[in-house]
Image 1 (tube, one colour):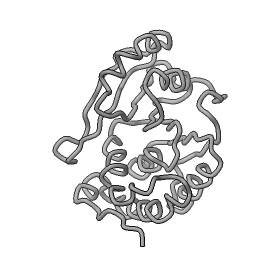
Image 2 (image 1 turned 45 degrees about the vertical axis):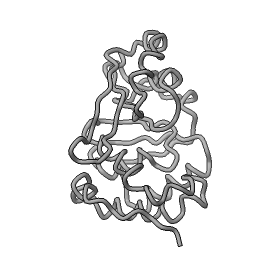
Image 3 (image 1 turned 135 degrees about the vertical axis):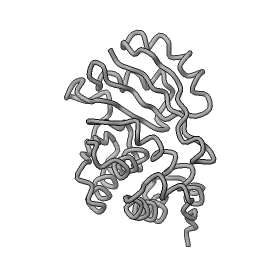
Length: 207
């Protein structure tokens, strides 16, 4: 029997009237995530706090049409699509079994604001058409900027989930930020007073 973390009180606050959908996704990921190679064996007991709420709390930062690079298990893309039905989400993932999972979940949850694209970010063919791009646990910022910035329209944003070393990542990515015309890169902390461990994003504008 897989032990899935009990739902924290903050979940209902963050998801509001979408909480039932979030519960269904958490149950499916907790039950099938490890066997399908989406999450590791240590993750179900901290699924809500470490993964789902860490992703969902940044939902207010987005608008328009948003890409999620390396969407994997749907963290943050599917979680954000649940939390923000008014935003269009393009989940970009190269691995076939993960694409299958994302498509199944979008259909099962009735998420008509999700498009799943099987591709690597560097193979994106549509040009700089997205209002924002996000990513979580994909790579260091200096590697991520060349993958994400070309997908974003002029004046759009990068909103990338990062850990405690986010400030250092910005400093290490100075050359790439300049090359790809990414300005005003800064760290924002989201969810203070709501989550025990608030989320950090690197947020920047593409010019």
